[in-house]
Length: 446
Ligand SMILES: C[S@@+](CC[C@H](N)C(=O)[O-])C[C@H]1O[C@@H](n2cnc3c(N)ncnc32)[C@H](O)[C@@H]1O
Image (cartoon, rainbow, N blue to C red; front, side):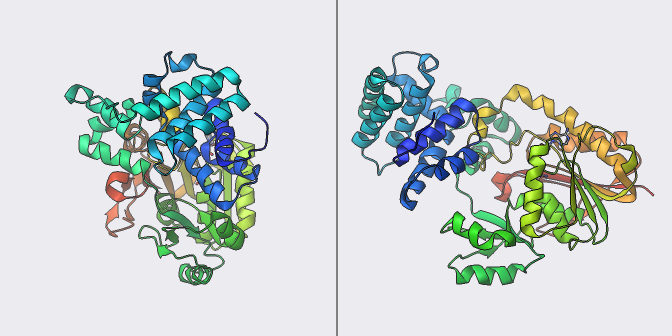
């Protein structure tokens, strides 16, 4: 779909088409879509809300829509379904938008982007939803508990079931609520250029109020960011936008200036650039990834932050490179994973993940970890991390590794909050208040 959006709803439709029908990531599609539209700051804000809101609540929107559309939703023209979802989101979740505006504007979109007849269908369905929305009640009673929670908190039912089994109902609900909440905006200070306090002062002069992260000495949080564009434009070389939990790796691996470090899964470079900061940009980081186009991002991030010690190379982390054997002081395996700890950050992810595909990750993770282990020099350290909550990808990978690699021992590191020594750490969003993450540290015997 090509065209220039003339208003927030049209901009949202063009972006949602990319996400729902072409599999684009919500944040990237939004970024690109906003760049292509001429909208006021207020309209950009509404577009953002429409896009993220419609994507996050998709499952629940479809539940309502299937009550007012008299054929299965999968039989609709896919673009009509996108328009219906966008309209339904406004009707159900945006109090300040009058129902008439939500319906009329959706009809206009259907007529313009699909055809006249589509306008009629959208008009009929959304007007009926506007009239009847209060009468539809989610299924109640113990037999429908999971379905009700899935609808109330807009998560797929399989995930609610999985989390209930693992954590109990109350925690599962908290976890869902965490994914829906808007977290504080977090970023890392480029300590090669400034201290955290120094940057805080400079930001305050520009009206950006921040508070220090409790989890990372390099992290700052901002509860209401006036403008992301202004932050990036004014302070691009001073910051890296990053979750607090992702900042833990550099502290735990603790690389020293002058060392040789291998990062087997480095793109887009959040942790690799953090490691470089810890090393005072002295020594050598070899940043690898399976995809060359993703390594462009590592190079771009290193350039922006003024980092020179990172060298990138396209390399499959499962494939052994003999020259690197026993050469690295530290190795990071920040493995590809199911990402179930960071659904809060990626609006579409809860709908694109599938339970049956979870089992693909542990074999790949074990292979990359075992390969990375060969590059660690005797006495050197190996850090394994993921951004998921799945035990099969986390503590069970660690157990498997220790059982099969007697040349390694668990290594202790201080818990980021309490300072107590631990050998592995599982961050749980519902308990810890930050995105889910797992890490564990090993040392190669001398
Ligand atoms: C969790 S992300 C890494 C995030 C990165 N460490 C950061 O902090 O910005 C996992 C990365 O592993 C890469 N990857 C997937 N399979 C791989 C493989 N077999 N070998 C190396 N990298 C792989 C993906 O392209 C992705 O960039």
